[in-house]
Image (tube, rainbow, N blue to C red):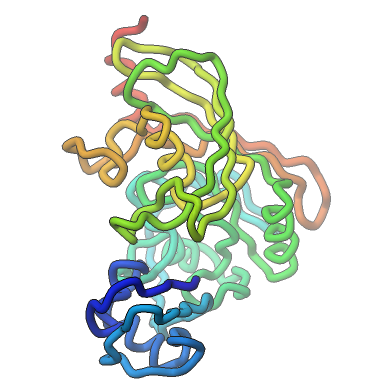
Amino acid sequence: MEIEVVENVDRIDKYLTNYVDFSRTIISKMIDSEYILVNGKKVKANYVVKVGDIITVKDGFIEPLDIKAENIPIDILYEDDDIIVVNKASGMVVHPGSGVREHTLVNALMYHTNCLSDINGEVRPGIVHRIDKDTSGLMVVAKNNKSHEILGNMLAHHDIKREYIALVKGVFPNETASIDAPIGRDKLNRKKMAVTKENSKNAITHLRVIKRYKDFTLLRLRLETGRTHQIRVHLAYIGYPVYNDPVYTSDKTTEFGQFLHSASIDFKHPITGKDMHFEVPLPNDFQVFIDSLEEL
């Protein structure tokens, strides 16, 4: 990621907290390890940014962590020598990161098996793709590097088909729609994403209506691309935000978080080539809420 400084603000470690999801401590470590450069050169954490500076934040930094296996129940739908398909609970973080060291899906997977790919390092063993903390549903995990590489290539070529179910605020008027709008960092809040033409990537989401309620609509969505927060950003952009989303709505929300669920996944097994299909029902809190709604 490259960030152009447009105003003299502050020292770089503090300035970057508005642009990346890392603490100042980790940002300082990244600066020391030359994962963060200014105008292509190494600086210190107390460097004061200047107008016109280009800050480069490299991918791949892994903070040394002591990741512990934890006996946390997880819902495994399928497992063989190469992959695991898991139904992640809402509220569970996928892997350790800034401010999170335990109680993640990775901690649970490490307790369950000693066989996980290590392509993404010690912080993300087995993790090929992620879903947000408060998004529930299906993920595929790699148990070895060969499977991980093949699955990663399939993701890059959109050969893994994922469909989501979301409850949105408002009554969506059309039966189907496609949203084609590029997504990048939000200028006003760098911890959020937004539809923007600047420093963005193309993003396409397809949707169809499942059911309409008095003040809500239940949607099924298919991703053509996989950008951070893509569904949440796109639906908020068109005026039908995901219900109970603490980030992309200004409403008071519950601990359950956004009503967004990874409901189905289709892919070819990375080793055998067999067609794989999995579906999981909505979480109980999600289902109970929509059962209470008045249908149109």
